Image (cartoon, rainbow, N blue to C red; front, top):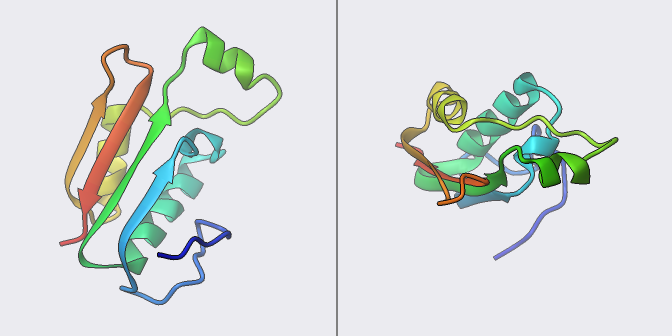
Length: 111
């Protein structure tokens, strides 16, 4: 396994080179829907067929908003995330919330 540091909207990886792409608690830091869509497209591009894209992110709550005062916080909702993943080409997207509704988890695959 190898960890990379870079721009998620332009990953330094060849097409179809990964079996999985994950992102944890970072989607809300992507400032626009357009950039998030580029991130999803890049994740799709670098996955090989059958590869999985999975992750989690926080949802809006008072403590979460306070933590992000002066910081980028653009929360993506479960329905919007499912639609955006499908638009990027992913199949079988599953997006669910934890019991308290504070976090979402997602997974989808490249067909």
